Length: 502
Ligand SMILES: Nc1ncnc2c1ncn2[C@@H]1O[C@H](COP(=O)(O)OP(=O)(O)OP(=O)(O)O)[C@@H](O)[C@H]1O
Image (tube, rainbow, N blue to C red):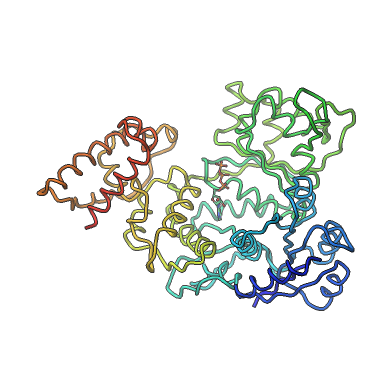
């Protein structure tokens, strides 16, 4: 049974948490002061600590510091009385796994605990497992959480993982793994190339976790989402009053990441001016807040990601060539999921295990039909799309396995859509080679053509298909084209599916 130590000077809160967590299968210890907690930790080593930020005898950050000094790998979740971003940043920088704010919500508590227990390796274990493991080891993540559903004993794809991160089984993924291992201990700047959702950020985190900086912050920034005006302040911070709207001082991402790693996603989207400032930071390893007067020394490892080759962006004049050369110390290419079909079921099973834990369910497998659909679908959204599809399907499923009826329409009918699809590729994948796959047989049409209802659903279905194809399966656009709202489109698709399954 996994042990959780609750540290809170509010005895009622301790009691409530204790009852709740005991009901969910954890052994719970409690302590009302910082001093007592440290003494207790000499005797017992819990699997996780939940600690209130304000204790009577000690500030939460002081206690967190002491705990992290002695037990660096122990996951600590900080409970704060109010949502204070400064506290959050501070405790995360100090190595807290996460923080939750009062009032506490049972689901949030459980999910955070399960994630923390699943992702933190014990101090005495190697940080990742790369040797082949037992067949039902997919449930290893689940097994770390006491409240997790029963382990599936049936043969499933082998899953190699370190916490939430799993290693694909394809040759290409093995190469990526070797590259991660090779570059992680260095201070090299890394460029990760890959389509959206292919796992670039997950790779950056894995590099961080396997580096000397693992107990320092990992800060991820989506440069594509930064406006031109605010990018500088997001990255480098600003002083109060340094421009209209700068009502308070702001610490930028680089400063937050000091000592650790910064991950700049979609870096080619940064404006040219910011690229100039970035070059200075990369060259001089120091930065100045906007409106500030003094420089801050920086010791930050930089990992960047891009959909487009930075060299191409540089040639087009979109990206500074000197910055590209600074970044280009090491690069990793992540191929889209459709080019590594061997990984699809492995990740699908992993995401199913994760979702089972999150939802407290015990769906054991994907039906053979779903497996066949998954293998032939193109996964434009890569791992993110696969994860979302599994999450949705797990939520919708009641039985032992996920059936095709729980998949989104455009996926369960993908073969048919493909069959009827015009030859032009989707715009988002223009540059990608066509997916290598066996020609899948067209699913048999079971829709009744002899009833009036069947005929009318049939006609609607044809129109919906046409519209979907025209807009590359974007449902909002298809709904617009058909002059109906999105919800009606969903209902029509569902209706067709239900009718077809009768
Ligand atoms: N190796 C992996 N093991 C487990 N989960 C993964 C792995 N790689 C990616 N994921 C999951 O897939 C989803 C997408 O991954 P990620 O955010 O890393 O993609 P990305 O390429 O950075 O996407 P974007 O470019 O759109 O930001 C995330 O939910 C992530 O947790």
